[in-house]
Image 1 (cartoon, rainbow, N blue to C red):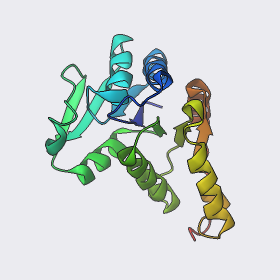
Image 2: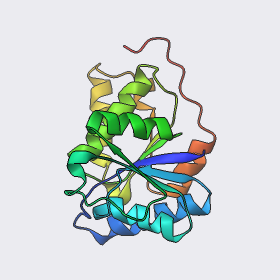
Image 3: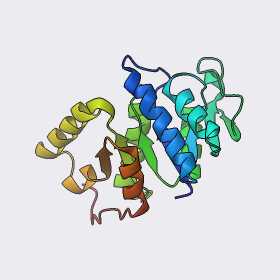
Image 4: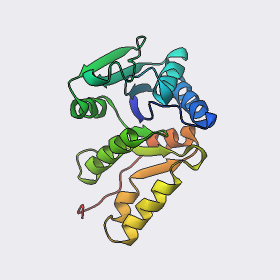
Length: 188
């Protein structure tokens, strides 16, 4: 893995553990020589994971749309900062630059970015690993809902299994290193 895209919040969340885990992940990526691709902000968990990777000597590439340059306060000290026209271009660029995707806790934007790359995997548009860093059980309600989607016949179990989940970022990165996407003959 050369680079991992991390989707995460532009807020820090209520529990300090979210920031702590973002710091751990940023340092871990740098220590393993894996570049970070992320949303380009200097605030919230986004800013934390980027600063931790940078402080540990890692490569950090931000991708931010023009309209969020002020709202998310673009990070000025990155290895590279790509400024896009819109969110669609942002997500495409992040995917292009990355060999896998991890989601730390975040809000609607994080969920939307995660859902898009997961859908792309389901449709066979990429075979990159996707993981949820389940900090303090943050993603358990989503995992339950995904299981409900399977139970109700709207999602195949193989497509559910595209989402690797764990509370230990190091274990997720280990799983990414040996990832073999499930073979699915048909997407529905």
